[in-house]
Length: 335
Image (cartoon, rainbow, N blue to C red; front, top):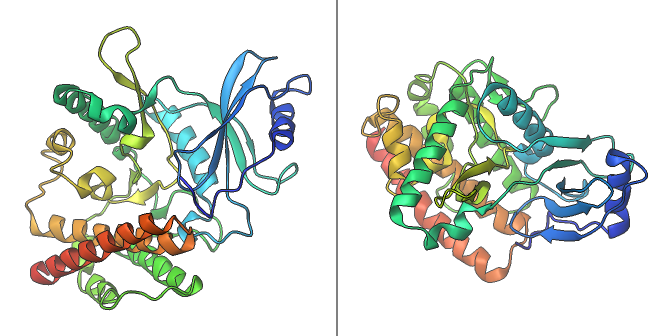
């Protein structure tokens, strides 16, 4: 995917990174850019001297404007991977080396284990419905493990400076998430579509509904088919080999998980949360509608901030406008 935030490295630069982390007798063999992502630059790297293939993921150039919530995306991803590998059975790639000191290149980066198989979204249409439902159930089991992890605050996964959020209540944290994205519209000189700012006033009115969420839980927020790798592994039936891209993780309300945005599309995931979430409850519907608004605010702005291809950008803006009106009207009706 073409995006303004992607900035390719030369073979010479990748070779320097390889030597830094795998020894000066190692060098970059085959180098293939992985084009599926939307934000970071990534390469599949063969290291003949070590007999391994690894993936190096590189953050955007510091001079490239990114959204406020993306400021520490790579540090969050590394911290998330460590948290999940140590506390869950979720198959998360091992982090093989990190570079946050900008000693070799002026960007954050890390090396990670290469996963077997392919992303689920690439294969989904070729798979029988029963197999896709089985994969949904596997994802749901992993997501429930992830959501079972408890935090000490509501807000960003890591804390420590002005670009992180640490709050005692979920309403306070989510309100700041919303403030961030609205301020990003100003920063990128993008006009907020008419009527969208009503969301902030409605969020103030919904304080008690948000404060029903009393315990911070780990939320991945980017767990969708494109980040789930699957392979047969000799069984004849695909199963999950790994889950990647945890850079959007935060402490909050697990109702915000991506697959709950379209519950009819992920029936097995919704079914697995029975007893934990009643999607028919009014407070649940209101919070879910706010989470949809937040997501739509982000993807609408991305079409300008990341400079996606024109036709793709237009389709996203139309989708965002229609969805925003629908969810805003729903909140007004229910609140």
